[in-house]
Image 1 (cartoon, rainbow, N blue to C red):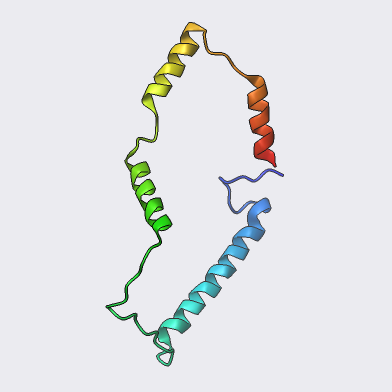
Image 2 (cartoon, rainbow, N blue to C red; image 1 turned 90 degrees about the vertical axis):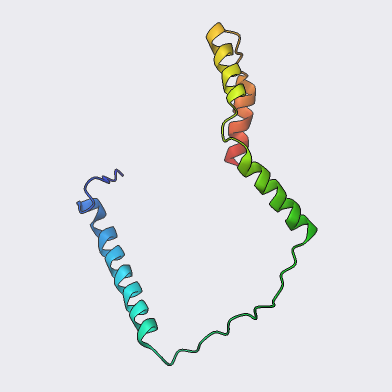
Length: 107
């Protein structure tokens, strides 16, 4: 089945657009009821002196996350090495390793 995203009101997508419209209508109706109902119970806000203690493992994960955020997304040195290897013909493709990785990602 081919879905044409450029023509959202075509025959293939007519059911989807009507379903989405109905869902939006229900969502909007729910929002109106929530905002106009003054009798809805108010939730108590937590006390200002409430403290949260993180485990040592959570603290370690936070440190690791901060370090990862500081690292560049692309290892420029590795990219340059691969580019040079491909250019001079020394790059060797391990088809067995590629097949193993593909099979591992399937299951």
